Length: 436
Image (cartoon, rainbow, N blue to C red; front, side, top):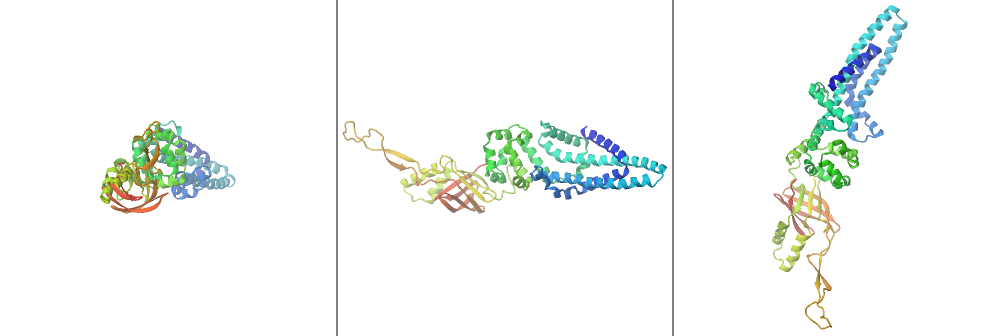
């Protein structure tokens, strides 16, 4: 009933206003409303400068607020013109016509004004219904109609009523919102009602690369926020979080999100596969494959003596354990070692020395552990660090360039099925794809 009540109230009010103002001003108001509706979208970008001045720096505020502001500005211009013409006409009938003619004209003028006012009310209602159709679609998808916010709740319930009454079909041909807006709303609704998809969303190539930025790392490290996102918190509660508010208000981030291929993103969320990035087999996260790494190094260096192989094996087993290689969609790459091994040199082993028996008599057995020497467990004793770099090429042959404090080097990478092999600091490493 919300929409029917709104329609009746608006029409009744504009009939009264039209009767009071007269046909001239009511007609110009009607023309202004029509002109505003037609010019709202093309003229809207002219008012983009206005929203940052009042604190709305998000690009979405200008995209949606610009046409609304243009609609009212154009209609107000016509109202001003109508007031000027009305004074001229009223002056003519008041001072240049006899009283009988003026009286008849005033009655006719008011009654026609009331009729035109009904048309104005219809246009106002269609404009209101259009706003409800645009913004209400997002609130319905994200369950905001049931939120504690009175504005969002009213908007959501109005949108639901608009659909129930079938009025959404009347305003659908005039809907100025881009297709991307509805795709974004669909994705937001899909994630909101299926919170388990949040982890998959984080692995989408574009978001995986964005996650390297400080603002996203802080969000990922905030356990309370992650609990809200993956729990049952309402959209209003999530948006109220300071870190989320900072991201939403960041115009650069919002612009990058709007540039996403939403159809591909939705397919990825639903199936776990992205057609757009499927051709780049290297993209994604890769976990260290210890067994395959040992076999590959043994194959590459079959002549290595057993004593030396023992040290190499220890290094490959321990130094790169739990390391992760990530290839991003923008050709960036990252190799992250386990925290307890990043930047650490070879662990050293204490060897007991020969000692003396009590009383000073020499003996073969030690009586106490006295460190006299250190023996490295690895072949190399220099520290190694996590590395950043880039990748290039196409499957199955890639080039991986990684650099850290030890320098930068490029190695040829080979991708076979779900395994990726490349060189790093003199060692051949094999990584296995981590499922999204």
